[in-house]
Structure formats: structure tokens, C-alpha cells
Length: 171
Length: 268
Image 1 (cartoon, chains in turn orange, purple):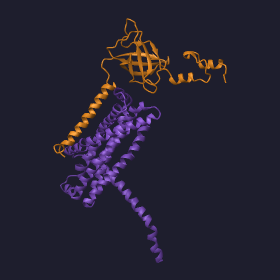
Image 2 (tube, helix red, strand yellow):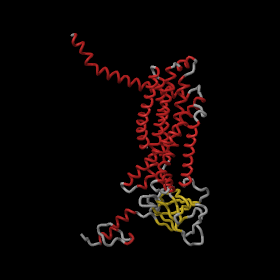
Image 3 (tube, each protein chain N blue to C red):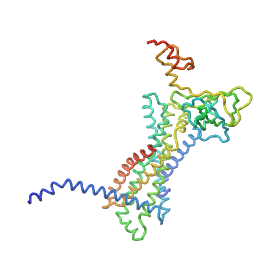
Image 4 (spheres, helix red, strand yellow):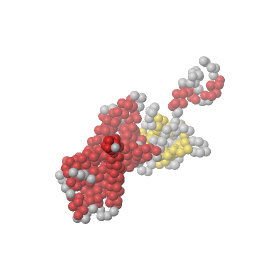
């Protein structure tokens, strides 16, 4: 059972280990699990985060610049408070807008940031004031496909109950 | 009167057979149990044989890598294709990375690595110890006041229990790589997105529960090999029978314990 008699198997074993290690390294480098050191945190409050989860990407113009590191509910305002950890090279103007968007219909949710034009940047520990929460896709589909047809509430501003009460019954 | 006496054995023959096989099964279960306890005790009590342990770690662990790797990569690839086809029936091809990763880490990685180990190692252990039993080397060992449990059984039990989780970790990675290979090469997935979806989806417990399973399976594989080899009777044929029994019983026990471990882990 010595290593010398089984050199072919030894070699194969090493090959398997090297392949596994290679794929693991590739996954870790691409998967974005290992975070860059020295990132800074900013907070953003959303009315609705949908299926956003810690670890989700934060992007500017589609390029990943950080991750969502924490999500919790503010018990006073009932807003979802997210902590975003951003790449230190990326400075965001103070009037930037953070928005929860989905990659695809079924796919993951991430935070997209649209940079503003203000001269001063958001400091580490600061807050992104302009936010737009997740769009409830099924609620949207539901409001479009309401049996009342006709006047779908403009951008969801009219409460559905009120419009249902005032709309003449077309059936 | 004589007729009744003659009739009794005839009537009770089936009962006698049932009784005998029940007792036999009980004796077997008890024997394995006692053997396992003796094995565990000898793992934790000196004298230890570190050179034997290292030798077994290499034989059981390192030299199983090629087999485990090949099994894992083909299984991952086939699983990926099947999930892609199945997902396509309700337009959910995109969930393939997540399901492949979950299936491999929670279930297929540990079970397939354990089955490969059962075929490769359990049989080898049974044959080795069985041959030593047949040629009375075990009795000779005892005469030289070396405890065969500490010298033969304990290193194998410990080595298999330690090494199968590591093999499973390799199988997990290579299995996911198999699915990734098919997805990227054949199904036109984006490599980065595939990997990122996998990494974001997989949780520590998915891999961890698989590794705990693997440790249990490793113990089973070595235990069955040692038990059947140690209790081999009747020369070369007995050794052959011990080998078969070792492989079959460890495979069955792996599947059975897999179910119960999974219920335990999914309930938690």
C-alpha cells in the first residue's frame, strides 16, 4: 500500500484535489463571498424590501459595488432598515437614489443605486435618503387584471377599495 | 398417539424456521452492536497505533479520491441536465444551479461518496481481516498479546469516520463543478451567474448536515467491513462471503440511516 507502488492512483488523487481546489477558488473569487476589506457602511430605509436578503448585491449602473450586510425592521416607523457595505473606491453623491430591483421574474433581488449630482458624498455610516422599495409584482398584476377592467388606478395612488366602490358595476 | 407425535414436528417446522431466523437476526444485531461498542472503546483507549491509522487514512481516504471524484462529476452533470429538463416543464430552468447545489451537498455527495467507499473499502477491509482470520493470524496476534481490536479495528473505524467527511467535501465541490460544466458548455448558462447563484444560495448547514451524514456513513462502512471480516468462517469461501456481506449490509445501512438522519436534520 505504499505510495510508490500506486503512483498512478496517487497522481489521480492529487489531480482530483487540485481540480476541486481550483473550482473552489474560482467560485469564491466569482461568487463574491469574500468581501473586499475596508468597505464602508451606509444605511437605506425602504418601505418594502420584498425578498431582499443579506448577501444580495448592491450595484451602480449594473456593476457590483457592495453587498447588503444586514436587514432589520425599524419597530417605530415600520420601515426596513438595510445596511449596505460598499467598496471604498465608490463615493456616492448625497442625493443618490437606492432602489430594490429584481434580476428577473423569478430571480434574485438586489439594490441598484442611481448616483445623484450633489457635490458632497455620503460619508461612511451615512444614509441614502432617496429610496424606492421593491415592486410587488403580483400585486401589480392583480391590479391590472381587476375584473372591474377600465380605470386601473393610476400608479396605484387610488386605493383599490375606493375605486371599487365608486366604479359602476359593468357586469 | 404415535401419529400425533409424528405430526408435531411437521406442523411446527415453519414456526421453528421463523424462530431460528428471528433468533439469528437478533444475534446478528446484538453481535454488531457489541462489536461496535468494543470498536469505539478501543478507539478511545490506549495503546494506539498511529502508524496503522496513517496507513488507513491513506488507503481509505486518499486513494478513494479518484473514484469519488469521477462519480461526483458525472452525477453532478447528469443531475444538472435532468433538473434543466424538469425545470423547463414549468419555465424554471434558471433554478438549476440552486437545485444542483442543494441536491449534491445535502444528499448525493455524502451518499455517493459513502457507496463508493462501501464498494472499495468495506470489501477490502472484510477481505483483509477475513484472510487474517482464515489464516489464524488474529489468534496469533492475541497470543503475542496484541489486541486485534486496537491494532486492526480501531484504526480503520477512526480513519473512515474522519476521512469520509473530507471526501464528501471534495465530492460536493466536484459535483457542483459537474453541473456547472454542463450548464456552461452545453446549456449556455453564464459561468459567473451560475457560480454566483450557487454561492449565494448554499447555506452552511446544507454542507454541514451532509458532512455529519458522511461521518456516520464512514463509521458504518468500516464497521461492516471489520465485523464481517472478523467473523468470517470457513477459509477462502468464508472470506468471499464476508466481502459480499460487508458491501451489501453497509449499502443498506447507509440508505436507511440516510433517511433517518435527513428527517432529523430537516426537522431541526
